[in-house]
Image 1: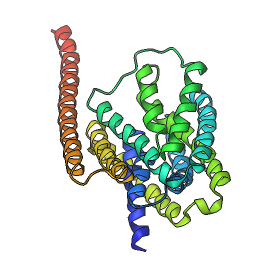
Image 2: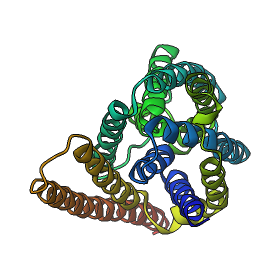
Image 3: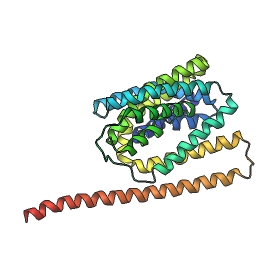
Image 4: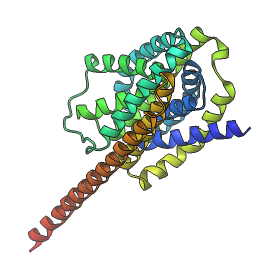
Length: 304
């Protein structure tokens, strides 16, 4: 019972992060499940089955608020599903001893990416030209494969790529990626079902993650107003790097005297990333305040 409660809290925390950033539900959940000693394929399978419920709820909410570009969803979801199915069958065929460092390595790379991503200003829309299939299809294929083999990664790969393109509003990027993820989660679950059988899904784990995620869904809207995405992204990125570095060092039996050095280096980089994130956040807020002040000054001059 205590373990299920912990897993529900994991699902709650992961959905809070995902709702605030538009990414990292799978990465956060899978990282913590690996630390808990769950086999990589079962961890990814359980997370993706739970995501069927959380992504359906998130997609419906985004649709209600007009945050979904269905043209983008159609063009990224199908290739994403194909990539996820291939990734799930691939991970299912790897022995647990080999899969653990592979999956932890992908998650660690995604954690490093989050650390770097959120120490820079978040992108804004720069072009109104529509995104083409020749960009969306390969992106969906790669993001889906990474998502299934790494236990997460759809959001960290797809969301920043669409933001960087500058052709969609950030709210529509997050809404479209979250909505398309339902197809990706379903395809990955089908791949794991074929590769592992029904015993590959830890149903109590799935239920606990799902309950926590559904409770967190409405709270995420509150969290995003209280905690800036810049800080939350850097904080979560450091946590993911730290937990997966531990898994990798255990898998390769790293010397005991090396481990504290690695942990200290990661913590130092984490603190530096948080410091940079705070600086960027303050700079962005000062620029926004100056812009508002300039706009208010123009009508006053015209009136004079």
